[in-house]
Image (cartoon, rainbow, N blue to C red; front, top):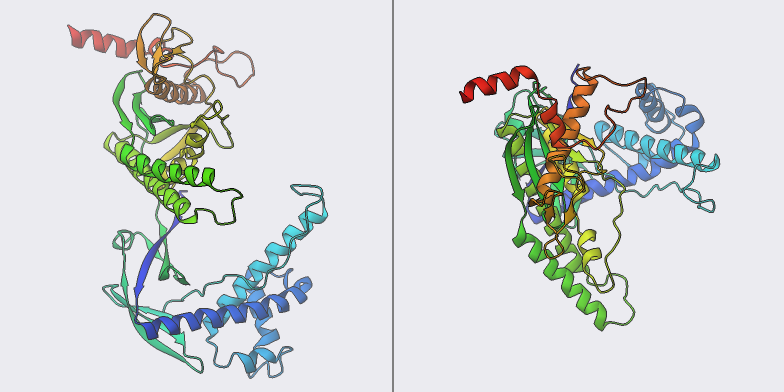
Length: 451
């Protein structure tokens, strides 16, 4: 069974200054409620924590909320302080406070049992003043218009709860798909503005098996080198993705930081904050562009798998003294591109897979053995036969071939020696190995077509 995935969209709220103040009061009132509930729930966690998720909210409501069947709750403060507090806002606050207390109890028990990053690590603290945002339940707290260009939200005026109508912009395409189910949004207000965080439960389709994969080699000289490798060892497409203009803009700001740091003695907290922020935003934009291009190529050639090298946690070494290599590695986008591509491609039904990076760049794709780099141009690789080729392109061939070889071995198309899970033969997998494993039927077909 294919599990659905959740994706959120940011819908900007168009509100007047008065409406913005009412929305801010609503979030402030919700957070005050959460602060009081955290202490109550933590006090009674020995009983509340043993209940299931459906029974926890009624149990907490019995402690704080006055009704005809519960005229004398234990904590009368909530009835006098939060008068006319809507029931769905109250249950959202209770649910958030339960999660906050549960997280603290779990982390504190882990700290007591010795599961710490350092031996002298301080114990975790229960934070009641947390940045909570109210959930807006359909029909009770929010009412969308049919065209989704406006919505009515129940807000707090300081003395009463009323409905106001605000505009909405920034829609994407997920709401147009009838298979996607819109969930309850969150009202988010911060210094940047106010918006709705609208989650969608997307129905994940399953792409059919294909006879090719999209192999990606991520580097610092070229952001991404892409090749579509077929199962028979042929390469259908190759491409270099490198947004040089954006990278120059980012490096220009980083160079300003370096120059200012050399002219400054002791660096204070927040040094060149605006330049760091701009450089980070440019990096984020590059990651979005590269991941979108990878997904577009994968859809164009009908592949199911996008193959990357598994580089999570890898820390490269810096270059020589006064070299910019360390700074270039610091701005490397290998994890950001992988994460963005995985989120986008999994929503379309594809899979992002990883292979061992050992030897993909240091071995030639034609099976001639180890290669050596050109000292004048590090992107050029010199094979043992004297042939010159792009090193990143050769690595992308090997990345795709390594995954195809593993996939064929898992499916039982290749024999294994003994009970060891390693592939046979135990050597560096390059694109040339797929040529040797080419089925005889395909060879005969190619020979007949050439005649």
